[in-house]
Each structure stands twice: as C-alpha cells, then as structure tokens.
Length: 314
Image (cartoon, rainbow, N blue to C red; front, side, top):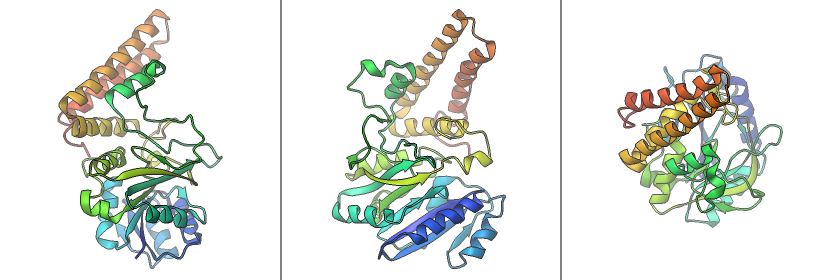
C-alpha cells in the first residue's frame, strides 16, 4: 500500500462526505486506503459515512477522545508507506496526493510534509510554521518582534508561499508522514486532547533527524468546523481558547521543562498586566480590562489543574 489516509470525524457529516469526494476524485496511480475514526458525533456522521462509503473501515468511538488520540486509533488498520492525516474540512485538488507523495519519494530525508492552506475564499492560512517558545510568543504579543529580527516568529507570512521551504512544523489538516517516522517516534502523544499535537510530533521528528517541509500546492481548509460544534472558537486561529491554552502549557512543560513553562506563564501574565495598566490609564471600559485579568487567572488555574503542565485535563 502506498498511502493510508486517516480522517477523524466529529459533527461534520456533510463536509466529511465532501472531503471524501475530493479525495477519491484525486488523480494518481497510488494504492490508497482510507480509515475513518468518528469521535462520538452527535449529528448523522456515522450513518452518512456508512451509507455513502460502506467499504471504508469506520471506528466508532463512544466518547470524544480528542484529535491526536483518534488518529492513533487508526494505526493498527493501516499499511501504507506514507500516512496522510486529512481533516474533514480540508478538500484536496486532483493532483495534490500525487505531487506531495512524489516530493516525499524524491526527498528521503523529509519525514513530514505540509501544503499551502487556503480558506474557501482564497485567503492564505499559516502553513509553514516555526516552533513556539516563551520568548517569541512574548515578542509577538507585545509588538516587540520588530526589534528582534534574529528571533524566528511562529508564523512568517512575508513571502510568496510559492516555493518549497523547510520549516519546524506544519498544521495537521494535511499532514503527510513517512511510515518510518511513525515506526521511530510514534504518531501523536496522547497527552494532548486537541492542539499542539502536531507541533510536538514535529519537534520529536526533527529531534530524531528528519526534515519537515512545506510544499506549495493549495488545499482548501475551512478551519474550526468540528471545534465550533462544542464551543465558541477564536476568530483568528479558529480554535477553542481553553484547550489551546492547556495544550500550550503541556507542550512547553514537556519540551522546555519546568523553567520553560513558568517562563511562559510569567511573560504572558506580564503582558496582560501591562494591558490592564494601559486600559486603566485610558479609562477603557471595565469589561475590556477584565478580559486580560480573566486570561491570566485562567492561565494559572490551568497550570495547576494540569499538575503544573504534566497531564491533560481531558
């Protein structure tokens, strides 16, 4: 088998079918298999998938186990030399599969490959990313990044995104992984319920000596379709803020140690207190000031709820 495609379904019945239609209309001569994991959808996802694609193995979870853990569940069912993690709200064009696998075939040191993610109206999404650190997050949130040109920000959008580029990590909505990487470092750490699992996986992959690359072929990605069925999502990153905060803390503790996660807490709290002071001096509405105080409170609360960043709450 050349490529094994894993989709995790969660309350996205109609767009899951659309994503599968795009996948099966793609043009290539590769031997491809598909496995779907449904995370206890409350809509008619299971029925619709079973009706339209009865031959696809469908793992039906009784509870939502999270994104990374659900992908891990599919591993015993796959046999491809490449594994593609494809979001149900991501739609591949006809040549995407063939071109990305061909690139991996020609570049045996490339362990993980991502693509050019665009919204449904053609807007470019962050696709070629760099590891977050307490310092680069602090510089970005304070607007001081312009004074530290030598510090790599998580997102560098100031280039045309039309050429192959080495990076630290790529988003998990189109995430092509060489099977040898999974055999060596595994897939996703079950520590994370959602968010940061691909950042952590790329961190481990690069540490093991593999390359991570961005390939400039477009894939339409809606973003946040599963998340919004459970909670309000952020407009910028289309993520559930509480889970994003928790996963960041888990990531920093695992990969930067206790000093790293505490540095992130202190720097973020400092930024929030600066904003509070600024709002007080400007006589800004109390609700605006409270937003930053609540964020700091929730950040520290999550730190202790996760046993100082060592275990997830879900």
